[in-house]
Image: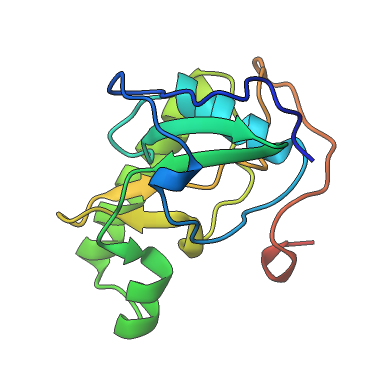
Length: 157
């Protein structure tokens, strides 16, 4: 369970104070330190290809992250509907994904849960990376991690 750091509401952007009653809870994403890691990364990293954190606050041991609304939905949904992407479309998405990963790497962050479900599209069809709970921070140079993690059905042996 996430420890309460500040029981009052903390607005990350816009200078407006909000609380849990101002939002409808859509789903619980997880427990433990993953939420803190995700909040820290989203507060520190700004990129046109990374989902924006609008608000973050804690109450009663729960961490709330309010992210920007991305009306384009998951890349997974589009891939399922299309069956496969045309080469130009795939190259467009891939280039934006690479830019987002390079941006994270320059900040010493390894993104460890890359899958179509964690790639959202904005209203104009541009990529926004989301779900930073499995990221590893403070990585320098060729430093390696030794944690076995990822989405069970997608882990390559």
